[in-house]
Image (cartoon, rainbow, N blue to C red; front, top):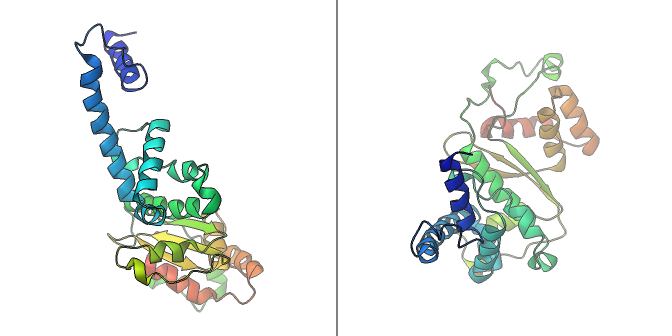
Length: 249
């Protein structure tokens, strides 16, 4: 093992639970590392605050601070890019006691993480529909569409899109309407330009997108959607996808 790698591993242990890992080579190591640990924790915490603002608003700042601190301790970053930190936060939240009384928290966090992933996704041109012959049903049915790298689909037994929407900064807390918690919702996250778009769609529409993602032709995807809802308005759904960049060129 190289001296550099050995030193790096000792430094990593010192930042964790082994505060004495560098005591033999760094004077007053524990105190000095405490400053570094605080800086790291603040940076990771601010990342989580930025990515999960609706969740923070729902649970309250003190509770979110506790969740954040516990997550940072349990799941230190494994990637050098700070903006990618938080992938495991939705699953972590689901395991916490507060989710027993607020079972939609994980799905709300999934929506917010999907938005982060969409924002960071690779650039790609959205589907140019000018060449599509919408009058040729046979040609459309055999069409192989491809999801844009930013597209994400989230399904929840809870009205997760409405929960996310009413907890945006532009909604005053005293004006938050009542939300029917018995309604399931399906969310499509896209990025047609520089801004992330978050839309609620029908179960059939989400089924169509997932079928396309799995390699189905447009015709097979539409059939899967109709099996979910015989009255599915496929042309309206496709218009929404074309306008919001669900598919890549």
